[in-house]
Length: 339
Image (cartoon, rainbow, N blue to C red; front, side):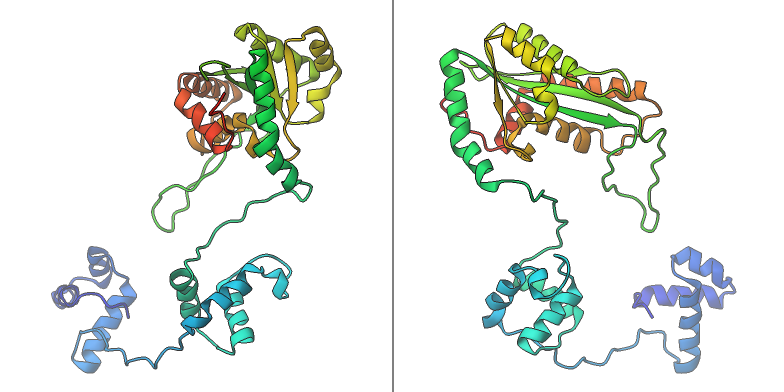
């Protein structure tokens, strides 16, 4: 029986003795009818309505403090290294590991305390990383190659222009939201596959490091082609009226024939490639993260026209927030100190 306060118990019994139905008593005090029945039964059998006094539990098994570092070393090796098929540490698995390595059979509560309190671990959803990523190449690009890219751009008096594409769908990006306990919110969607393709360019000026954002949205349910990408590069170049160094990833569309033809006709436009599978190196990717997972999370418009208006509104507002654009660069850990 849940240990409600003595005062609440007295009031429940008083109303019950006054003839109030059990259902009405339960509703008035927000307790279950079963609890009211048990309380009245306890009074009949023992003459008391006080909560039962729990017997003192036996001394809990303790994990030796001087072996915590050894346990953490085992955990850092990963679950696969200890015979499981996936990298998933659960309370049960950690308990089995402790039993196997330290001959201690601990309760789930004790294992949880070891992880949370003693080791300072927390439950974290893993992120997925493609096996094809070349971590050494990515690190070298951030620490060395990018410095060379910006030095060459500075020598040309060129803007650094980070470019990236993204899609917005009627199927919303869902995030947790507060709601009454036991009542899971429902988000109703229209055509979940309806989409709008977008592209943006974040430009950094060569002298004052001023930040500008340019963007374009394609017609509904269409994908970017070499022609539309080349057209966007032309638009950005015309807006800046200066040499530009375009920095983007190496997806096939970025080397399509229309893009190559445009580059051959424009000596002021130079391309630099970000390593494969490394979106965290492109500040333009931060634009999409900010809008999708921040501004428009759980946004479920009825049609693409409404989605288009809202995406356009968010992008226009971001154009006037250089401090946000600067934060996207900072998150990529790209240095512009001597730019």
